[in-house]
Image (cartoon, rainbow over all chains, first blue to last red):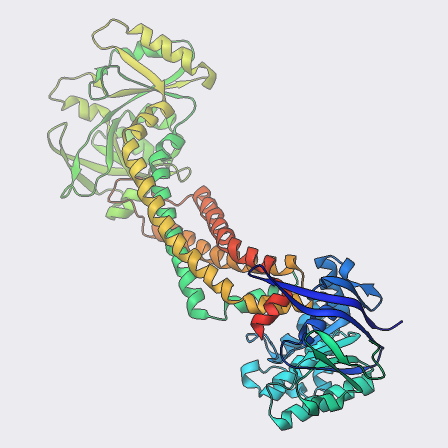
Length: 230
Length: 381
């Protein structure tokens, strides 16, 4: 069974009593270990797909099955537990907590797991080691460059060893050099640590790092490569 | 709690705002403690009252005396174990600005009725022997720097003339409800210089063998003197003291009302600040929720933070009031024998602090609870 499966998924938002359809009959399968890029213009529904897979939004109709769980049947509390266990999020603007050090930011997801302080510390340092920032553990986000902040965010995403990493425009706010470093890091996480990665991007260069890419146009999958069946 | 460390970090993220919020809560609770202590100090005399003591006074008014001749008849009432007497003196000391109570008492019987006044045996004996001797409370002695052997000059108002008393004893209180700002001297000495005539007593203090006998004994004493020219009114010491408190009824109401208004105004300002601080943190709360923290986790984080700030302010406000009034022996210009912030007042203050914290966290906590991750993510972007 695919790690991620979307079956006839539709999503409609309601704004000021207006119905705004965002996704229409989306069918998608992502296998374990895939590295998939979701591309498309703004408003095409890329982030919505990511949110549905990550369990931070629910489909209006259809089924979203991730890690063998039908997310539409989970309560809010169960969804929170699902996210803590299976998903690592990487955002365009990093979204680190400014008053916490890099170490403390990376440690946050581990507070949801039953670990001793010693184990937490080891795992945090390992995660920071993977992104090459062990020496910046006690730095605050304001003391880091954009690229470093995103690397801390990636460490936070991988620290609890989730099945899937969901990255929404992870290089969108970075210069070319930092963006390349982040893409290399994601490629390494996919290759060495077998993390399934779904990345939303406008950047063709970023999409090239992925094994496959799909295009969304007005809420409809317009292009489906080999790994993706629509 | 999973996010306790985060709560601690949040409290100090904006030090200036946190300090100002804590200070406003502190001021509010200091005022609360002070005003509440005004009320409890009014009540202190009532708390001090012994359950087995009755006060016999003139039925017409406390300002009219009753005859010394009543003493034996009162003592003969079944259930009465001790009888003593006292007269309010009402003299002024120095420039008269610092008021304290003075009573003419019968040394041999008075202190036996009031074991709360702790006086060394040797000092009591000396006091009993010397006609012009007096005993003062340690609060009064400390305030005026008096020591045994000093002379206290008083100017009589009810009993005109200049009066001098030599301090032969300094008593201390058995607990903090005991008034240690009083002066006791010989009733005999007062009686012999009384221009209104001898043999007049202000009040009798009567001890009964059983507090349950108090209503019966009171009735019997008053019946003894019914239809005489000087009828008596006998009541428990507590009821007697409550009579004084009720005279202050309007003042208490005004103190309560003004205090409530001032404290509420400060509390509302503090609440507003705390709500703003929590609201600003909503994007971070969204991140926590996306990472997998539950609605309960983030709500408890918001509530604990607000309550902690309010509690710190409350503890400081109450403790400063307690220490300040205790160390400075504050008496509000002699209005109260002891002005001590009681444990119950501190407990009430801390409860108010927690309530304030809880109320200020209510709206942000609701917002945090309602926050939907996808919606929050759009704002974050």
